[in-house]
Length: 121
Image (cartoon, rainbow, N blue to C red):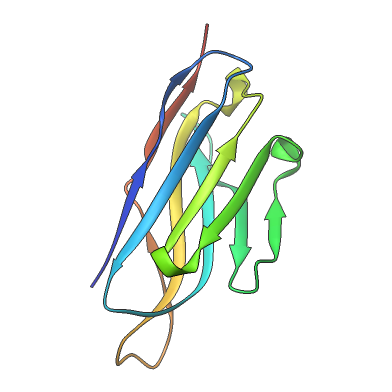
């Protein structure tokens, strides 16, 4: 019903930048919430940043001032611009949306498959 396609991960040196994208497709009526989460080995998945339909944003303290989340409603796409990357940013990054599909009464959450980000020299 809803598919999430993530892209933009890879290997980057400390201090470098990457831009992640996540595009939702399917019978989507409305996307209320879009967010990026990450999980590194041995740790729980954590929120990185999120953005509501009203474009209100929220960031983890560890990424404030370095990462920027944005969304393009016409493309059902959320972006995460990551600057000044650090080795501790290394993780699998997951996209999450809360969306209502056409004909449904309630919204539900959907997760992407994840994209690896590795920060290393």
